[in-house]
Length: 354
Image 1 (spheres, rainbow, N blue to C red):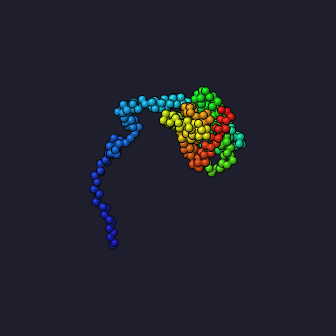
Image 2 (cartoon, rainbow, N blue to C red):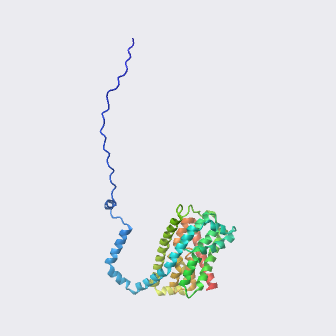
Image 3 (cartoon, rainbow, N blue to C red):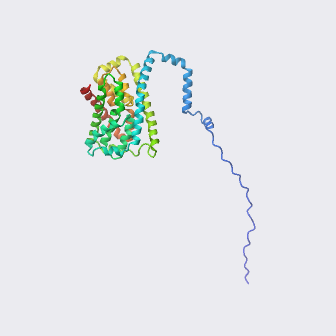
């Protein structure tokens, strides 16, 4: 008889292993330890402290330098330009942010005619309802193109808004109290150039030159957050350029030899070209450029008008913003054409009105 054997149950048990106690997570190194390990790390409070310490230690030489006649003249012009322009800049930034955030973008598309030739002057005149500097007009023009507005009308709006809005025209009147005709000349010259550029686009513009913006600024934020975000951005942007522009104007006024300025101012063609190029290089906010132009007393009203027409349409910061919004190819074609037409428009307007 067959004997079957069943495998015996294994009696060997695996001996229990002692549990390894869980190690507490290593504490993250503090900022102080990181700084001591990596070396000094500069931040805003540290930089401010170092600057204040240097000012205190060097207050004697600084006081001596500021007492020099050339520095007294520099400080006078700088403070005058900033104090006169700052209220208009702040008011323009607040109104610009309110309109950009709370006015529906579809309002512009409903207000413009379907015919591009007619839409250009209407969009140019619509620029008067955006009280702000050129920094605000670029994103608004980008939003118009994105929502289906013809690029020619958006270009006219882009160029006219910084120069013919009520804040800028009021600032121009304050800066030129003895020449009220400058207000009308600035309005007419800027609107003329804006319309010419818009019509020029309808004739030779190509869609592949224009990169459509991919998204809206402050997308996904509440209206309040978008408003204050726009205000903070524009104040820092425009305020910084205002200070730089005031410093440049003060330096030009105080340091540049009077013979150079007289030589440039005495030649009408050189004067117009010099102030037009200066407007591009200084990149002053349109709410403040009238005060800078008024401080250049050696130059004619025609040269100052060229400064006021060119500046809000094309300068260094605008070129960068337009390239970032509409593409580098657009900016490379748009900037030279705008510069030439702005000078020509200012000269023609001056011959008629000044």
